[in-house]
Image 1 (cartoon, rainbow, N blue to C red):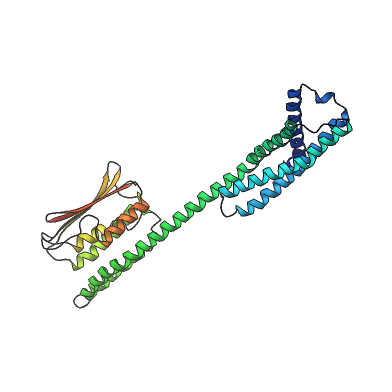
Image 2: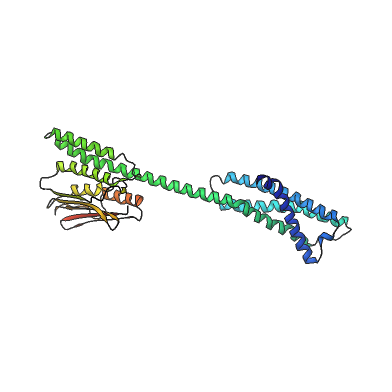
Length: 347
């Protein structure tokens, strides 16, 4: 294929241009070029083949030059500039070779008249049109590659930005979680050293789980086990008046979920509990969706977060947008003496 394109195609290109010019010219004047002297046609075809080789060679050199410029990004301005240069090169070749050749043949045949303007137009326009067609065909693969590369770079940049944002959100979450956990252990140190050791072990297991990349999914059973460990840690410092109910559907097992999305809702329940000191945590599958619900009483004189306010819920909302775009629904709000948060995920 390379041999044909390099050595055979230029000759065919030149002959195609030549026969197109001759057919249009002779049709208009009612002549038949094949009835002329053989040497006349031979000279014209030889010159056409020469123009074909020179044109394809210069076109390919021009393509290589612009390929280096397009390595970074495809520009419409560069495409227009390249096409203009290609047309200019084509016109120079045609007028340097075809026009003098035709005039010389007129002289050898005893024709003293200057070349008609119609002939000049044919000699310039037809090769130019073929050059533009060749340009479009030859460069279509380059344009497609440049388009695909630009799309891939854009997607990579978008993914890098999302990954950076997820890491930033996770970095914001760690200090908040550690503060609550360490505060729990602190209060145990003076009264219950064995209990403090047990709490430290729970904290260690929780931190180990948090080493998971937030862009890698885990079985939902594993996420719920992590949540249960966190609840046990919070129960240690909770008031004896607290009435806790935790109920997870037994069908929740191998479904995949992104980690650390449920904890902020449970964390808020323990943080703002009051009034009747009741917390209800439920999770199950409803209509093919994972539904996680957290209910907690709040004291009348304490302001619990409304809607998505608060660092924990704001971060959770943003993570859901990044990890489950169009596949989640989070509703949260306070009603009189209680606060309810419901998260639905398509998993």
